[in-house]
Amino acid sequence: MPGLKPHTLLLLLGLLASPTAMAAEERVDSEHWTNDYDGHFKKYTKRYFGPHFDWHWFKAQGIAESGLRSNVTSHAGARGVMQILPTTYDEIKDKNPHFRDISKPRWNIAAGIYYDRQLYRRWNTLTEPERLYTVFASYNAGYNRIRRIYQRLNKSDSKWQHIHPRLPKETRGYVKRIRKLKDDTRRQDSEGRLKGIANYFNVASRSEE
Image 1 (cartoon, rainbow, N blue to C red):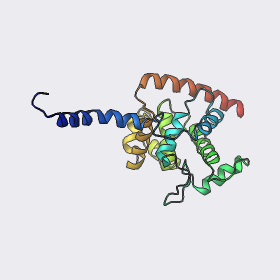
Image 2 (cartoon, rainbow, N blue to C red):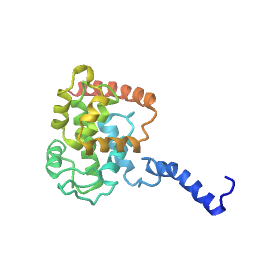
Image 3 (tube, rainbow, N blue to C red):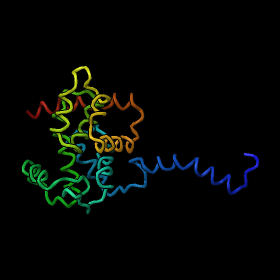
Image 4 (tube, rainbow, N blue to C red):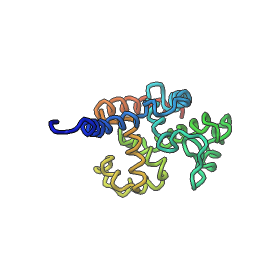
């Protein structure tokens, strides 16, 4: 860039580089995020979604919920890494009596992923990746609220691009944040893998009945 002073050139180069640096920092597998709880995310993803499901989806969800902080409580009373309401946790604990204190990251993460699994089973008429995105939307806004939105759509419009604009603004941002953290840009690869996992999950679910 002729005519620019060295310090100005460095400043411009820094500005041009910063979006890439920020994107790398935001990714779920970036060193920016703690790996203290990775073992919990891996273990309970495998338990509730099978061995081939990418556990990073739920770590990304934990980042969107709390920034992976275990000691935060929302204004509504949701607690921990996965921001579980105590009443919801009690319902989950009734079915999983071995779960302990909601404030412990292990059990908070286990409960969050277990709840995702319950939602995933409810959205079994959707194909991937709509199914997973709708699970996250339901986690954020509530299953019944998202179900009402879905029921107002024509059957031919039951795709994520038709559900998404009707979601609450906060929920749209929430799902977008998770996808950004997960770097969900390789759409075809992502869809193919998720479809295979969905088939595995459906078979596993039938075997439990």
